[in-house]
Length: 217
Ligand SMILES: [Cu+2]
Picture 1: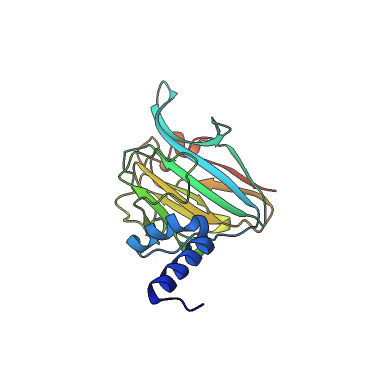
Picture 2 (picture 1 turned 60 degrees about the vertical axis):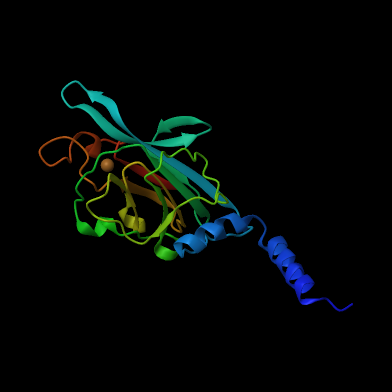
């Protein structure tokens, strides 16, 4: 059978849609932002969702401080110990509800590092309602290799893994990474969001708030 040009076009379109499957929505977003797709695969993926909340009572002398939490089964868990499997693609989503800015301890922490492609996806200036971020949603996002150092609320940083995720105020950030070494590694925020004259006390010096241990098992 000989297909007309029009029919052939439709046939090709249908094949593209069938092959493209669920990534079509994301590709639509990428076209807008000239981005790259997150690694899509059939391999096992581990999802880690962190929530940054602010204005949490710390103690009577310091007052209120921001903190990281681990979202697990719909519950906010203490972030002093965060567990991820080794040699596994980690889908990391961080929802930052903190609207405040904090100065970085060093400009290097504005750069994304240690992630797949050296990038992160930022859904900014939106109310971060995308809990359990659905990667097929076609919504507005930016592909980011570094943030503006003056527009950062916190960072999620694991120096020994060279992982650095700078977080904008009121944002949802998605990145993928592998932890290929088992062991316990310090995680730390490197934006001076704590108490004291340099903002490095209080939450910044307290496990479960702005620092803790990443356990790679
Ligand atoms: Cu912080």
